[in-house]
Image (cartoon, rainbow, N blue to C red; front, side, top):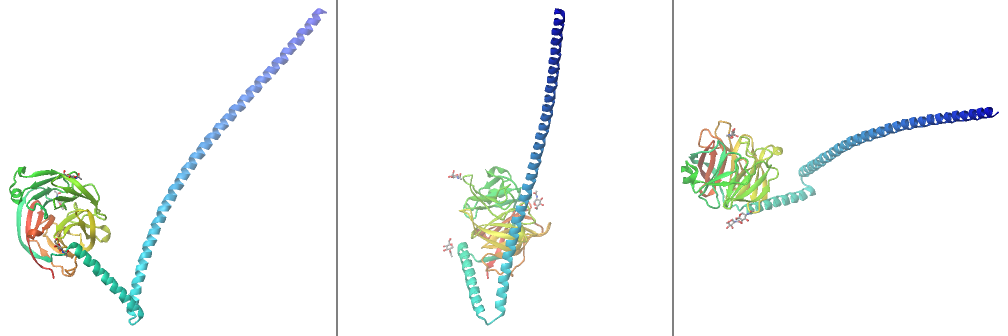
Length: 397
Ligand SMILES: *[C@@H]1O[C@H](CO)[C@@H](O)[C@H](O)[C@H]1NC(C)=O
Ligand SMILES: *[C@@H]1O[C@H](CO)[C@@H](O)[C@H](O)[C@H]1NC(C)=O
Ligand SMILES: *[C@@H]1O[C@H](CO)[C@@H](O)[C@H](O)[C@H]1NC(C)=O
């Protein structure tokens, strides 16, 4: 009986264990299943994150493209607006012209009186402003060039292109020698004899500039050297030669984009000094490469007045000012120099009176020509020679 009981007990015990084991196995399967689900969910989550990241990136790319398109459209809009404005002013001007023309045609009408008044007023205003300019320029000198009296080759030294100068205001005896189109050493000689006789350079004082120059257009006035700074579009340096420091600078707006004279392309800004003071000469691309002259106040380094001249830059090699008149020297490569265009800022010389004045030498290539009022002569650099031309003049008519 006991054995049966034990057997039963054992049996139920084992059954219990089996059921227990079954449960354990079922739990393990469940855990495994849950694990798998979690892993798969994790994978899907990762994929989802990846997708989102991709979307974000794509969206950023798209918005960047959109922004740049919008920017482009804005630029176009501004350009269009400018064009329209420009067109409007031109239409307005044309309308005004037509109006004038029409009212001038319909002779005896009250309109004409009004217009004549207006015209008269305009004329007086123009005359007033011209008078002001004249006063400003102090047009005390009143002569013009008729020809050349003589030529003297003072020396042959330096590069093919360069510049030699005097100071028409102060220390009139001194000679300054600036060889080359890009350099920063100025040689100063006590006088023209020292310059002419200096085979060796001991007779000269060397002055180093803070910045190199561009071209051969420099000028000296009242102890200062004025020059176009190399590497700048249109910066003008005012350099105190005695104290050896740059004291001032200014920008000559509109200048520097194209050469002043087609035959000497390194000079973008040329300077001139005459009886009336300091001038700059340059050319601008959008006014048919005609020369523009600017009266500069050498003390304040500001623009006093600007003239668009009728003289062209094509085939020009140099120019200079005398009594407020621009004289432009033209040439052809290997040819002879001649003054072919003059422009009077004071309107005394008629623009139709345009004599051709030939230089007294067969072949020449001037990289600079400067006028010196005190002895009515020109200093020029002619293909490595330093030349003086004496001038014939007469009263302006
Ligand atoms: C021109 O300048 C001179 C000397 O600089 C002066 O005596 C004269 O009064 C000036 N003339 C005019 C019209 O300003
Ligand atoms: C130039 O030098 C002079 C004399 O040494 C001095 O008086 C002047 O202030 C200097 N100018 C500049 C801009 O440094
Ligand atoms: C001098 O200028 C002329 C004209 O621009 C040019 O043809 C020539 O190469 C220049 N010579 C030198 C040495 O720079």
